[in-house]
Each structure stands twice: as structure tokens, then as C-alpha cells.
Image (cartoon, rainbow, N blue to C red; front, side, top):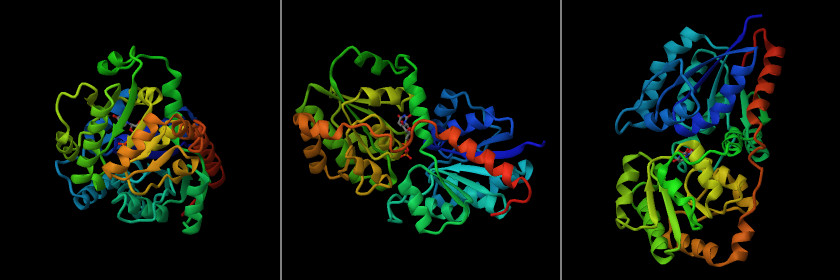
Length: 379
Ligand code: UDP
């Protein structure tokens, strides 16, 4: 029987990480012939993930330009992806998350009447401006996709409330599969600075901050608060793997140079990041994926945003919303450092985002779907 042709398109670090379990599952299956197209919306961070997981894309759109505007990025994505859709003529396009790559690829497929599956569907903050433009990307994708892979029950409820067309499945988040695999390996850190920290028994605070909404003063306030924690508590070490975005590189200049316990690192490999998460005392982040991973490992998390599309972390009690208000960040961090009861209350692992088998679950759904609808399935 002719194989089902799938096309996976992704362009940024988090999309690539969370697509790995699906790419691997499709590769293992006899039923599917998968093609990988990367847009390279974020070139360097994407390449790091491709290298880590030995993924060789069939197509590379190399779309990234300096200071790219969202509208020109969208236009270029539509234009460059369309010939690939024509050439590969997939039975299904798979996209992940909330990026412009995911939305524009789905739109291009929709224009060619190619069905779309959306991985990590149904996350909502309820505010179109936060995160921007990601909330809109995810909502628009909900209207185009015919298979929605929702990580949690809450995500599925959001989609059903919006009456999205097609079928909604609760699959868990594929990011949990990658986390499970990273931690199953007992390898040393690739990053030499992290290796040198390892023999010491210091409390590590892991910090990341890169979101568009936090650029400028809010990001400076976060970095300044973290630096003042490092000054006040010389026995801790703040580790900040810096995103490549010029806005992040600029904001971090607010921190005093040469603070011995405030470490600025290059972006980490996925497995180093997962090991550091397991090793750290708590996390301060505006990242979506890190909120999920920290919750899975029971690491208290200060969310550097005023809202989250992952309310599960708040409900589980592992995270609290601090925004970028330095007073609130400092107050919460001090509580965690000084009050063991408060720390223990938050340091509770939850598997609410998945059990590490989401890739296989999605493959099973796709297999059944195509077995049933091999002939003429339409959205
Ligand atoms: N991550 C990584 N190295 C880093 C920072 C993050 O591998 O230096 C991983 C992290 O573990 C998570 C993902 O990248 O799996 C999150 O990506 P990001 O914060 O860029 O995007 P978001 O999740 O907010 O969309």
C-alpha cells in the first residue's frame, strides 16, 4: 500500500525540540513517509537542536533575516513554502506550537487544501496581546487544523469551547518525552562552566528571559533583580543562558560585570538544560517550555510574565506569576531561599503535562485516522 505522506514544518528551538518525538515515531512507522522542512525562523538555536538530535531536514528555507518584521516573515513563509507543498503533495502537514512558522505553514497548506495537524493545541492566555503574536497564531491555527493534539484536558476544553473544526485529542506534551529521554542518559554536561559547578553544593537559580513583551525596561528589571539576588546571597549561583536575540544581549548589560556568582552562558544544548533544571533550586523564566519542564521536575518557578497559557503550573502550585516587577521577584525569591516550608510547598513534581509517551500516542492517533479515512478525507 502507498505510504501516507506527512510533512513536518518547524523553525525555532522549542518547535524543533517538541517535534523530535513525532519525527522519530513517524520514522519508525511502516505506514508513513515523512518529509522535514525547516524554516529556520531562528537559525542558530534551531541548528543546535538539529545537531543534538541528528535531524537532517529535506528542505531548509533559511528564512531568517536581521530585524525581521512579522508581516514580511509571514509573506516570505507563504511564498517559499508553497512550492514545497506542491512538490511534496503531503496527505497531512504537522506543525507545533504558536510561532509564525506554524501559523503561516498551516495557512499555506490550507490554501492548497492540505489537512493540518496542530501539535500543542488549545493553550490560551485569553489576551491577544500577550503573548504577541503567539496567542493569535495559536487561535488562528485552531480554526485551520483538523487534528488538534491538546497536551492537557484544560487545553482540550479551550478548543471545544471555541467549537474548532475537526477532532480534539488529549495527548500530553511531546516536550515531556524529550525531557524523559534526556534524564535517562547519565552523561556529563557538555558546557564546561556547568561541569565546573557540579562538585559544589551551591544552590543554583536558573534564569531565562527572552519574550518579545519583556523587551526593554521589563527585561532590564528582571536581570537587575537577579543580579541583586546574587549580591545579597553570595552562597547561591545564578545561571543565565542567554538567548541570541539582540534585545536580550542589550538588556543584560544592566548587570554589574564580574559578579562571580552570576554566570552568563551561551544557549545550552537541550540535554544540558534538562540536567541543569534537575540540578537547580528554582527557576525564574518567561519561557513556556521551561515552565512545563520545571513543573515536571518539581522545581518552583517564578514566571516572569503577568499571564500564562499554562495555568496548570499555577494550579499545581509549582509556579507563581511575578511578571517583571523586581520587588515581587525579589520577595518571592527570598521566600524560597529563606523559608523551607514555602519551598517545600512549591517543590512538588507533577505529570500534568504528560507522561513522556506523547509522540507514540500521536502516532497511534494518526495511524487510526489514516486507516479509517484513507480515501478522500477532507476538513
Ligand atoms: N532550552 C534549551 N537551551 C537553552 C534554553 C532553553 O535547550 O539555553 C530549551 C528548554 O529546555 C525548552 C525550550 O528550549 O525545552 C524552550 O524554548 P524557549 O524558551 O526558546 O521557547 P518557549 O518554550 O517559550 O516557546
